[in-house]
Image (cartoon, rainbow, N blue to C red):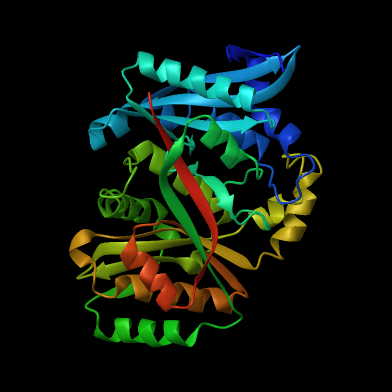
Length: 371
């Protein structure tokens, strides 16, 4: 197939970049369309706070005006300074089932990164580990949870034949039971009884102060994780405001010791159970009615973040947060809970989840290539 790679330079090309997934996934029932308005905000280099410390080039593969694929090459100065690694990201990848097109996209992205003295490109990052990331390699039979990715089955093959190799696998665990597993109840109650800490719900009447407390814990709790880059204050505030719109205040929990935050758990209703019915990606003018209708039917949550400050680990706080989260969730008629993503080599967290009756039901992969 003859094609060429062009850089996204104007609004029309950006629109083509953003809307391309609707072409790729038009016949895939498990794909969940993102909200177009949110996509445009994320890709606004002038306004979105991520781009205050990062820069990128977006590329399209085209043939006679038809888009065949897309990719972003991303340089995140915060990641490089924090991790002391000359890594760049590739992300927002979508492609038809054609290896030559995929190869061209990766070659173009790696060339731009190499110009910026990047030694290794890692992804998919959309646009970092603080947002959606990873390529689905197992678990194609169901839609993704909120802020998790989905891709077609041939994508892993495109990566491997383009010379990318596995960097790290990310696990999605699920508990799907109409009542709390006995093991979770037993361990959770024991942890709460013996632990020198308390757990409370986030105070929405004092939202800004609560976000400040969580922000301080988040960056400290995750700083040793593979691929981690600290949230900036502006980024964290923006994502907190977005989550506030869909949050269920009963399943946002803070752990405290002597009145100071030591950890937190953020569980969110799986809004993808609503968005899967909005294939256009638009809420207005008519999508809002579907949104309001299906929102009442959400019965699944996702715990995207559970962070404990290092000095308070191994004290039962993780088990206690899991227990309190699921007990509150069951009261609200949520019958499924996804814990994701968890690094494959995070042995402590994976062991906790296995102990409380969770099972791995999706696996995502991060790929890398030395350039």
